[in-house]
Length: 118
Image 1: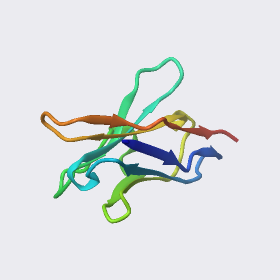
Image 2 (image 1 turned 180 degrees about the vertical axis):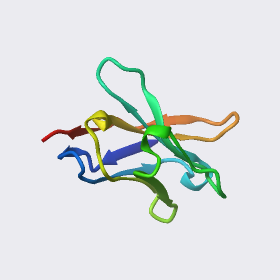
Image 3 (image 1 turned 120 degrees about the vertical axis):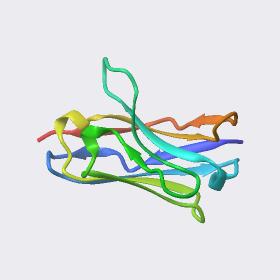
């Protein structure tokens, strides 16, 4: 059974930090590209950060560059999103996605809420 389980969300003040985790099971994690998406109320889901299965190629949406860092630990089957200097506009439900381009399967987690408020 494939599962992606996110954790680490919560309430943080502007300027604060959070680290999100997404732990995978049921598929060969090391072969999959991993991404973090977010969706705020009334907005479309957007790609926040992506890390390839192997090698370079990490990508970020412009609005989080220099503040967020995506990383992965294949031994722990986990992808992380370190979020620093959080802003109100970072508040959203954050989703983890696994895919195996070009024709492999795509899996999504259930999401974790991030609230940024004073």
